[in-house]
Image: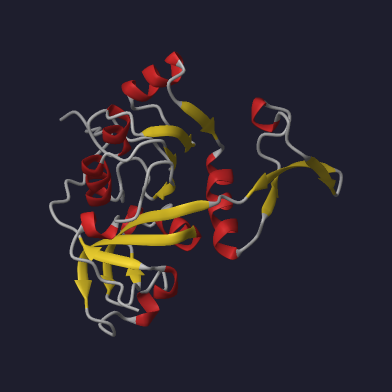
Length: 231
């Protein structure tokens, strides 16, 4: 199976209006910058995006929100995006806010082939309204379904032509979980090497999970909030 693609535009070919997409990253760290730019260029609409965050106004998923490409946002942290706030309050954007651990575990469940999980997070709150609950050892848990995503788009530091991936530092956040969970997983990497060039002991995501991979270009690697000590 040939997995390598020339660039982001080629790798996202097939993503159409109405798709459900997982996007890796934490804040602005480890986000698939090239693929997001290609999705903006392609102008697909009506997307459901599953991501830890919604980017900022002029970067990350924020670029897709600016172009009104996102119909529904499923996230745990959305506090840095004024356009997201405007669309939410105006009713233009459907939003599902999820506790961060639940978001991660629903990704993991999808990758493991589990239909649902039980979690105590959200019991007795708006998060739990209308959801099935069960008691285990005297404690109440919510049932949450595994995600069902058409595509997962992740970003890694290094990958090989078989799709094996290594993430660097904080970028090893939601990326490994989401890489397992898409029906089709697209990986963009800073460095693409031949199969066999990676130390197997260092691989975080085995290539079996990856269907498409390409070497990205021009990464900005922005810092969401830069705090420095006064001299």
